[in-house]
Length: 186
Image (cartoon, rainbow, N blue to C red):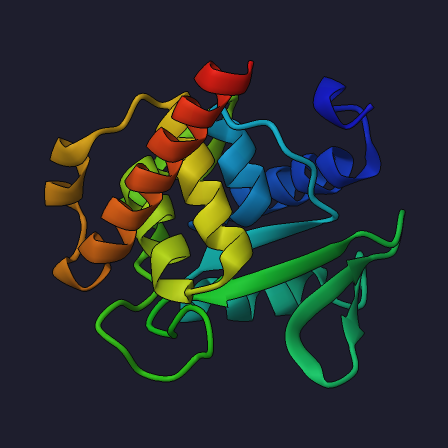
């Protein structure tokens, strides 16, 4: 059901996109839903949106308490009242992963998005870069699969911030090791 786009996570994403678009709030879908938009099909249980500070304020003013409930102790996580799906908000200028300052911060959504299926989604360069900067195993696995499904190679590294290039090459090497394993044992 997830991959047909009819599940509750997709429904939450579509409703939120319509609301943000109508309100004129710049956004970009991030996280697992962005990974899916860039050809690697995997499930996810929530929806991540990149907003700038003003967009986050507008989101809270217009939609929180009306359509979404706040999650206690998580000031940027909300629950869709209609189906219980979580929405996480990433904010321009904050940092991926631990949230501690680093060389890569969340960018302005209007500068790093592309339209895919009528929604603004993080472009692949920024998606890969932010996943690498987060330094989580799940994100590295996503990068391996984004490399595979988008035929990325060494030249793609030139588009990335220098602080994540080594991790990108590690992911590229892992993709190649997996391909060799499949070829030998397929």
